[in-house]
Length: 301
Image (cartoon, rainbow, N blue to C red):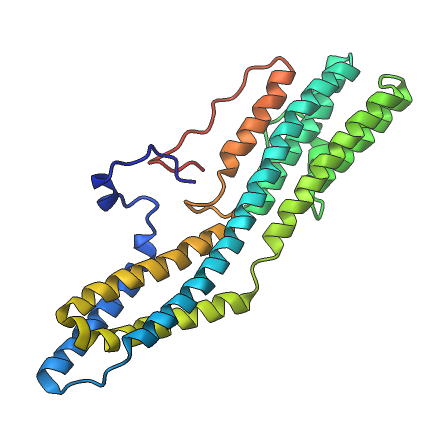
């Protein structure tokens, strides 16, 4: 995610980070060159047939509506994912308060919160399709960690083992009925957020939307220079470049927002978010927090 102060007006022309220009520069160059070629043909070889500017205006409005709809749908996915991860942070803090309230034994508290730590690591890695790496040692037993890593869904297994640990503490008499119920409900909230994130990750926007918008954008940018050749003359390549930048740039932004968990500049900073939740757990145990994840070149990962 791009994190930077609001730029000054003159700085907007020179900011490259997060501008998507690198993703669409090839398309802009192609359609600018295409417009230049049409101008040369029109002025040197023979006049080209005119395409109605009014018709292209109506075409552009329809395309803008399609792009706006897809962009709104993609942003809704991004925002819902951010709310779900915000819930995970809030539940991590609440879990620390509750476990300190209902569990008197420090080892039991640390062990149970260790399962939540495993959940954070595994859930983030699953959403980003990363290879499962080993979280910090000492949170849970090596055998338990191996059992989680070998499960079909390691994050869900971490929550499952946390629930089993609550049952063991209840049988031992360390945890009363109300405490077990409260902490079990907290695990349910983690599971709900996990399911929401997995739903977003596994259900992209319908492919037909992307196909229709991309085809229509290419068609519009190919026809536009024919309408501009006789109307604006040699300004048509400049207008074609601006239109290509707007339409293809918006598509590129939408593609990144559609996948909020991907490791791209405009996706959610999952490493920073999980570090915040992790520090909430550490502070609940009275242990020093780890350094917050810092932005590099205005990009927070």
